[in-house]
Image 1 (cartoon, one colour):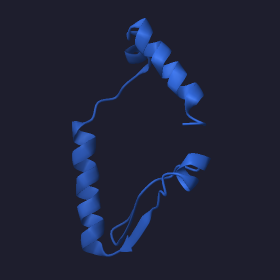
Image 2 (cartoon, one colour):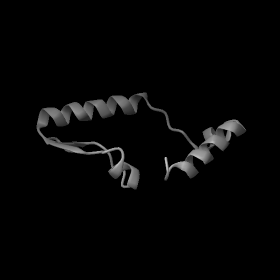
Image 3 (tube, helix red, strand yellow):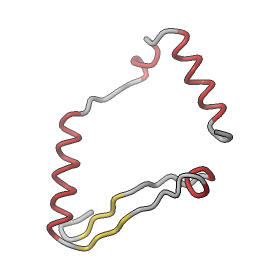
Length: 77
């Protein structure tokens, strides 16, 4: 993204993204659109919080087990 160009979409390069989700990236050349996207990102970043390893480690056992199961199942879901 720069002052006159913005790309909005996904950067997932896996089988599910290409075959099942039909993900796409939109590239637009225009200063107004680029400015709107930049404002949106800045607003989102301002409302976000950084999550570290301690956040995951403090979760209960059942959450971590479910997360590991979801990771294993991801290729076939």
